[in-house]
Length: 241
Picture 1 (cartoon, helix red, strand yellow):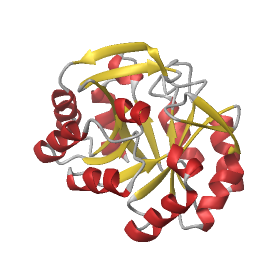
Picture 2 (picture 1 turned 90 degrees about the horizontal axis):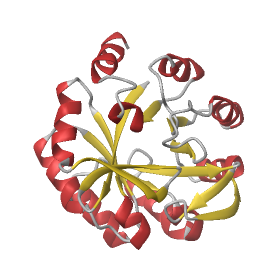
Picture 3 (picture 1 turned 30 degrees about the vertical axis):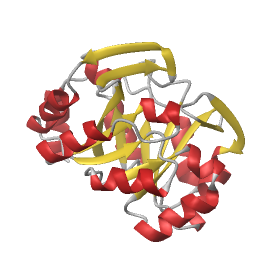
């Protein structure tokens, strides 16, 4: 299972929110590149970079942060937040993203998102399936859609999607543990999925459990910044696996 630390960006700074609420913003570092380099120094190869300003504005905003991290580290970056047009996607890939994550766009403009899957290939496009009570949430989690989570994933798997990041919003940033039952349910109903667990990771012991369930990766945010899980522990996990 891949370990994928998260850096969320507001105003070019590394922040975390709770349950996606912008009013709960906590700044952890003014310099995201510094954070990324520290991850890399501990054997981490992947990074989940989220443009929270972009998610609110419905267009890419913090692409300079992406470019800086991509050009000054060897981290493989998946980038998301506000990608709504072909132009946004072009900028993200030109600035060094290895993959992009589309969430709201996959709900609001299926035609365009499906075109991206066909144009860039399934290894480049990740479906962001963020949910509240198993309903898909969009627009930086400020809106809940009428889409049911599992049928939504199944429909996109038919279009060729293989990578899916699923965040249970109720768990995100709360350090209360991830949605094991939800991930089990998804993996049972959607075979051959590369499911990336996200939200709520709070202790190191949860990682082997997610790996055993069959998650392809896990995104860890606040647990790292609040020192619940150390980079040394993650380094050890990566070396063992």
